[in-house]
Image (cartoon, rainbow over all chains, first blue to last red; front, side, top):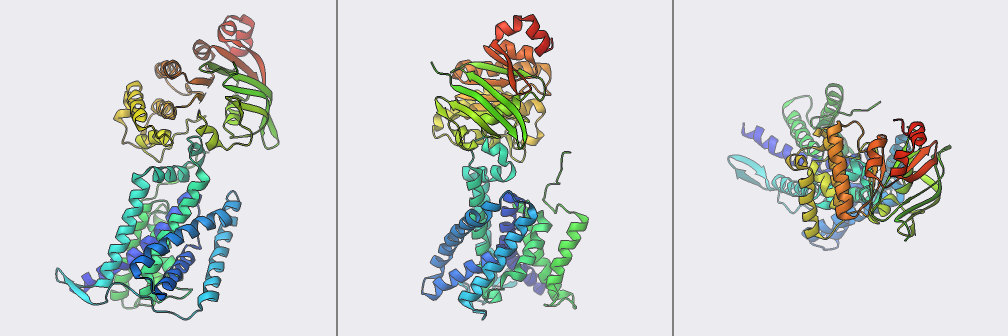
Length: 293
Length: 237
């Protein structure tokens, strides 16, 4: 039982990482009806920026928010420069553009930093602590706390502030929002900035576990896809809950289903994606898509 | 005195399909003008041209300033509230959030609070439903929400696209009464597109009848109402 609970807690911790990246996917999906395939690579690049800052002697807790700001600015810039010119293009064009962006960012990171995996510092010690009879590592608790704070901040921003309200309006009803004086194009850019910053959180949290290298996020993004699909790809709350479920499921499957082990965990994520798409295509919290003919 | 809104031989259309063939319309400061005509005559397109929802040529001026090449959101910020065809309710959001979006550009918070009080006085049902999703409102309630939201924008000109569409007569009457009140209390000019010609002529001071993208008849509403031939050929009653 105790080992089971420990697996659940570390599942929640990696679930927080998936949830952050899934939330980034959902933010952009809502803004342009399309998943950003470059989200993981953008998060990886942001993590390299954090690495560089820390490497130069900047303290972790200054480098962390600084990286989020840089990631935010980068996300806005990418939307303005790369996405905006093709905003009205067919979906397939946009898919190709974000795939191209992913390849570009990945290549750039490889060119600048090389492909050697690097140890990324974590401010939380790996030692364990006894919480109500369950031994959990400070690192897991730290990841849970940081993801929790970030996700709560995004929730408050979207639900409780005027700028969040106009962002939601612009994402769901661009035409009607323009008639209310909302600068829709700028709101979409803010959405990209926000997604990029949330994605950076997942990268920075994942790096101490996975080691930092240009392909670090390529499995994480699959789990994030699974989380977003499970939660409903247009629901921010769904992304968070989906992330936690995927994290715990994958962790438990790895620990208790003999043939899954560490190698087939990704297959579990893919199985989740396929099962959800077949049984409940809108996910747990997504709204059914109704089209008026 | 120059009119608040002046449209001068405006041509507009969707891609190769031209819909407006050079119409000229004026709305006076604080006046109510109705725009009548059959389906497809170009009434909605006229409103869409004003808020840059469709490409146009000619000239449109709002309090003396040309709206050429302005973006929709900037035209709205200049003081034009457009309640579009289909009402433009944001159904993903709550009633309250829809109203907030009406006032989101304003910084005069004391005035905004007073306007909220007025809105809830006009439409008590919106106060009851504040926390509910706007998608749960009936058609009439959605129309009330659209007008309430436009009022919260504190515009100088309101464009209303068929506020009576699909509503029960009693609801229509109360909405039109409030439109008249808004016009008088706030001195908001109104350009009203309506299928219900009798209603529109009752409330407006001037009217234009559109026919396949051109102004066929125009004049004081009272004259149009009294003119039998106009009534029979264009207004259908």
